[in-house]
Image (cartoon, rainbow, N blue to C red):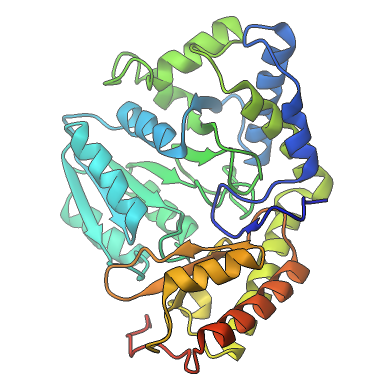
Amino acid sequence: MKDASEPYLLTPGPLTTSAETKSAMLKDWGSWDSDFNLLTADIRQQLLAMANADPETFVCVPMQGSGTFAVEATLASVTTQTEPTLVLSNGAYGKRAADILRYLGRDVQVMDKGDYLPPLPEEVDAWLTAHPEIASVVLIHCETSSGILNPLEDIARVVERHGKRFIVDAMSSFGGVPLYLDQIPLDALVSSANKCIEGVPGFGFVIIRRRVLEASAGQSHSLSLDLHAQWDYMERTGQWRFTPPTHSVVAFHAALEQHRAEGGVAARFARYRQNRDVLVNGMRHLGFQTLLEDNWLSPIITTFLSPDDTNFDFKTFYAELKARGFVIYPGKLTEVESFRIGHIGQVDSRVMQVLLEAVEHSLNIMQVSCTRPATFPQPA
């Protein structure tokens, strides 16, 4: 049971975790202890299995820090200074990937789709045809700044046909959205402990083709973010190169057990979609408008356009909801005022129903009578 004094975190991670996951952190672990090393090895194997990744072809490398640390470690290893990289950007995290590459001194091309339009496979095909010099392509699977779920599989086929490396930021989708590497051709996938597997912050992980990682030896710009060195050390010793986030790792191991018990990716995908559907239907009933049309809505987080009502103020709305037990996210769009509500973590459709009651009550307290947004173009 969740502590009633704690609000639900309706964010794309950190998120609300189970009591079992929290209780796993009550014991201290030695970072070089053999039991901890065995636990790390088991996590790596389970993540490969979750991705249907052949362990002869792919390896799993955990990396200390936030998800962005793991993204930077991957981009530094897979891309090179002599070959251009194309970033498919439609939000804040695509922009961040491009910024990382620029910091690394890479030649970056950006297909910028703005705040909410998906990169389409035919557009990627045309870009790669016009720019054969590109060696790597980067895609954010679920762009949580808008809540869009990008067409990963179709884009992967295009990138494969052009013979380019494909790097996928699956930070907010892996474990909660079907993503199987025996079906989707890619070279590296990056995710984090505190997303759909419902662990706590502390580390990310990379599932990467063995031959691609082996070819990256000595290429990293960083000592601590050297993905190849991290993998090589783990393979030789079973240990993390530098002090691991032991409590986060143990909590993640507990979260993996719960993920399996729930029914794996398919069951979690179903629960998250049901959460989204209850939330979106209820918010629309209250008059709110989603940024995205239904075919692009992810099961991770939904962006709602802010009401065009002088009494609506996001900070007040946030505080009212928090007082009623819910923490939501501000918007991250450049063109329009918005806010975001996540539907992942230890929440179900009943929690979404209670949230909708809290939203309606908060609007009444704020005397917001109109929840319709200002006019805003919608994707086709």
